[in-house]
Image (tube, rainbow, N blue to C red):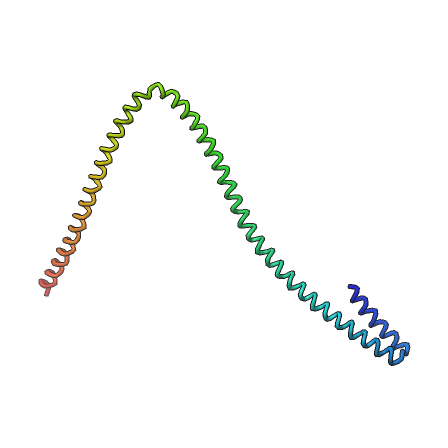
Amino acid sequence: MEKMRILLSVIVLGLVLTVAGCNRSELKKLKADLADTQKQRDKLKADLDEVTQSRNELQKKVTDLGGVRDGQQSQIDELSTSNKTLELEVKALAKARGELEREVSTLKSQAKTLTQSRDAALIEAENAKGRIEALASQLDGEKEKVRDLETQLKQVQAAIAELQKKFSL
């Protein structure tokens, strides 16, 4: 702003001196000052353009960062909701734990019976596992039979189609 004032002052001074009949040496000096002032003005314009470009780049970065911030805010909101849900689950689990601890203290008196029941259940589970494995094996065999039958069916259908072609000719 000061340089603009200086420029305007120099221009006005130049005009006043020219009108007032200043001599040539002063005119040359004023012209040189005017040229310097114009150079300074051009430099200021270049600086202004550079600052404007930097500002635009910074604005773009700010906009990009705003988008990132919005994304992070969304994640924070999701995490906050998830945290609240987890807190409710923790409370429910703590309540269930308390109930389980009460049940455990009640069941300690029946530990011997429960141990025997557990052993029996374990044996039964192992037997069931063996039956499941046998059934799974049987199922695999049945699947193989079905695939074989499907293959045979396709062959029979192809033979029927072939016979139908022969009889229709």
